[in-house]
Length: 179
Image (cartoon, rainbow, N blue to C red; front, top):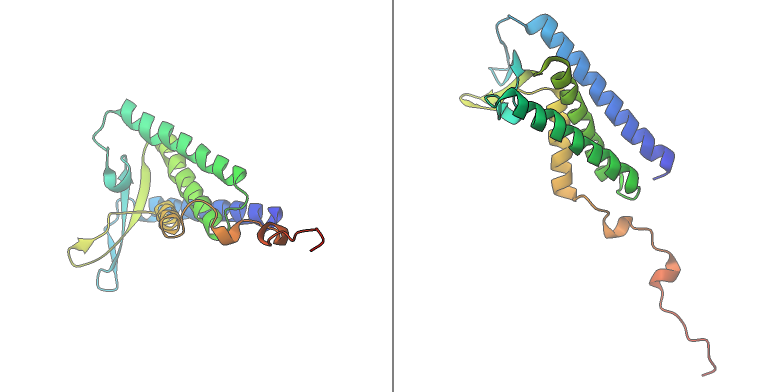
């Protein structure tokens, strides 16, 4: 993949995901705040407003403010900087791995934006059948989850077939003497 295509993929993914995340969270605040949950397809999809002061599924929402800030803003910022560094330093990751890291970066920035702006993340989607339900989540969470799943399936480093090897590197060397 060319450098331009790689940066276009990263930039387009990050800007697109953050844009969708911001728009959907703004709509959730405007339309769902203080509204009853909305149910679709026999309650398979539930749309409801929630403010998550914790991390995944509210983990850490009862922690002291200083600890939540340290971990959910500080550690997340460091992790996102590492993702950016990894994207820049490893131009041969391949399309899937680059996209996966760009999704994680976009989702992380989307939720970090909320935490830094208001101290909580706006969530509004819930899926399930009967009592078996997901937690309430948002577009940024979908991006992070998709990116992590792709990394688990495809790994983080370049695959052997993605490494640039020249024909000379693979071909055995012929002897140059008289036989």
